[in-house]
Image (tube, rainbow over all chains, first blue to last red; front, side, top):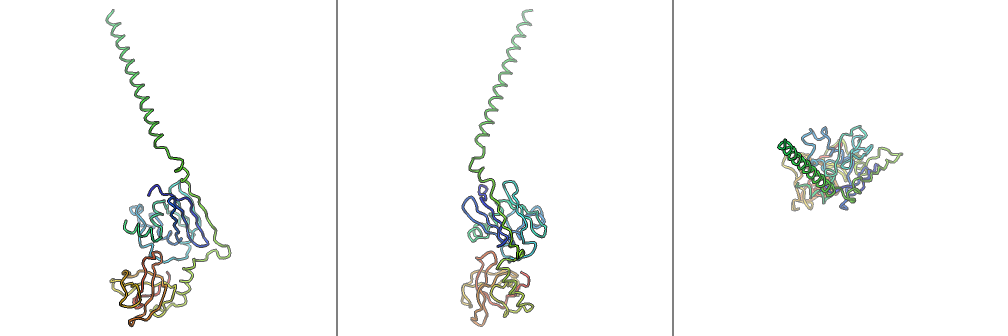
Length: 117
Length: 168
């Protein structure tokens, strides 16, 4: 898993989706709202002790919404291991590393793969 | 006088061996470190994957806050129906929540009707998007529900335990 890296990341604010092409040829498409619901920062996860775990399964059940909190303002790389997203409500603390983003992929194949892990 | 001179000579020889041994040991350690660095260096293929191409596509200027299509239809449907959270006002594209099961959950079936095979148990308060329906079967109104992100969570459910989500 750790060797899988993105080869391309596209944040499309017209469709409100973030697309990632992975080095293993897999493609992930994340609605912005899903990324915000799954923000891995300590504030959103409810404490530092919960920051390292996989995404909360509940985030996949929440319906998409369009608010300043779910509108992506900017996207930046963090070293060579993660990205950080700045949202229109000013929140920008979440660091989404590659492993976390891959586990967050909402496609059917990944959900079946990571649901039991 | 001969003994001290011999002792000094022996001492010199011993020191020479110690220094020589230390130099050999240092050389070996340096060589080992170089070998380890060579073996563990990142390959050129890995180096090429380090930096992903980041692309940020701007929102259309005319509608800078345009919501996604699904969210827009859900909002429109919700605004039309509110404030009457009754089973009869559920419509396609709306978001509904399972409610009133007392924590038991709601069965989602592969077809409308009590004879339909139970695919999964929707949890109390779980939110779904309405994709099909309504169907009147076995005295109940049935809607086809799909999980907003997990499309494996889908099936037909009776309207009696569904409530429109006001602000999904």
